[in-house]
Length: 221
Ligand code: PRP
Image (cartoon, rainbow, N blue to C red; front, side):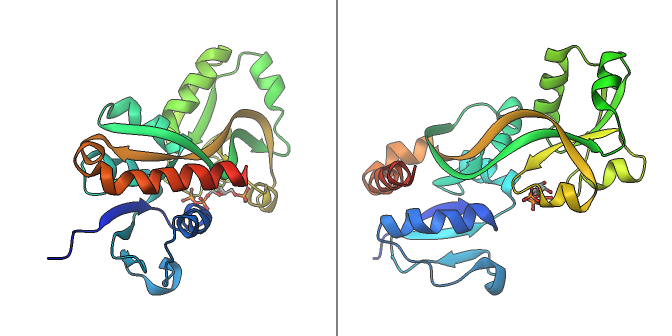
């Protein structure tokens, strides 16, 4: 009987694209692309590995419950997830892929520094509630956080919020919506995450992938 393949959880977009060279370094090709195939379980050209495509914020959940043996998730997503669901995940390495930064951004005409200086209470829209709360608490700025699930850039444009906390990569989305970055909270990249039970039970199969990913990401750094 053929062995059950290992399952790797990825999200579409930059994480998927930037994981392909790591998989190639592990000798694995992925013939289909989730953007065009729409399949949620993607076979690879290795009988030992299949890929599942999930929302970025769901990657830690699939790995934590063991529905995926390992996955790749942004530090932003992990920071939010671990606050509510600690344990069960081993985070061996920072892969240094899908690099971006978590920032505070506000409309061009909004004097953010003056508002902070005056002690104004700010309304902040974000998907990253924990990171935003920690950032403003550390600065002593009073905020009301409004949780959104996407298109954060819209919130200040229609009066839902004064500013946003969001990921910035090229800056193109901010520019297109006439927002400016007013503070960097932290640099973000993606980490490999592994189900702890899978590492114990399937370590022999998993470890070569973990080692190949670590070597490839170090070589690309
Ligand atoms: C992220 C982020 C910004 C955009 C920034 O969204 O939330 O909207 O990318 O990238 P840029 O600086 O290169 O323009 P993503 O496309 O990941 O989708 P999301 O709204 O689901 O987070």
